[in-house]
Image (cartoon, rainbow, N blue to C red):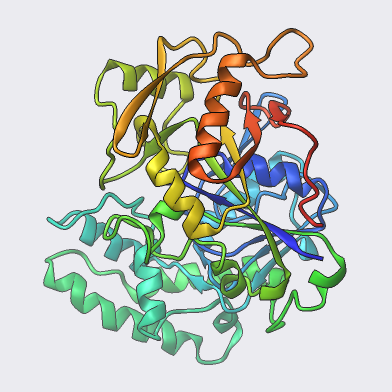
Length: 405
């Protein structure tokens, strides 16, 4: 058995959570393999909104187990709030329903202070200021705090060393230090919060992947990949599907279909190049219609037309086998729809409705024409279309693929 990977083909915020949620209904495990609380995967069910940040998007199904992989970073304060919100939605994640790899790194107050210090300087790149980048930095410096460290006898010494090492950098910028006491409070919270969820198996899915259906969920998007994205305006982890094997860890031979999610237009948060950006009333209108404000930060997202050149690149980098194009409803009724392809901005007649007729068994001719053009030029089949915010607002083009075949 092989298992699908869901990832973003743009700059994040493509609607990955909705697709993962759809596949989770058929699966037994949903696995996050990168990123941290800077992610914001929004789920709408019967008009109610739930945003997951660190927790995988399988939370709404009682039969699904959710796993936070070794490649992720975890903020205990943010996670406590997130788990409380999930519990209020009626989906409490007790014990086995949430497993956290013991090798995942913790984001502590000192990481958040370091992030704020960097972003307040002249080299700001527009991060979420959640401490994600500095957490990966201390991981690479071999002095980070892992989930498994919480229950070792030398944990106090590790936290003190972390604070002493990086407070020197904070002092150099005349900023307030992050005290050992503040960091230790969060460590104590983590010890209480995470104890029942820690998974120490070094190869957790080696056997599970043979017989149990899994969905691997990526955060951010391919164009933000640390190595292959628009560096330095990138995230701090690898976002390609190959990262699922390392960041879970998951058997490489069991990785299957790559389901890439993209919007019919584009958005970006923070700094960085954006060739099709609409810094005008068209962009403001689409932003308002699409609710394009960060699920994590609330910041207005930059809005622009679809860039097929970048989509093609993302498809190739990720070896994407299936595309899901979301938010088709947002552009309904626009004067025109545009897309950049091979350096030229092309215009398309916009669809006045999503569906051909009231039976909702076929898409309108204008939308189908646009989708056919995009998939041909991007190099991967568009198998599904998002038609609204709720989990039920989705259209499969043709027979629903068996992603575990």
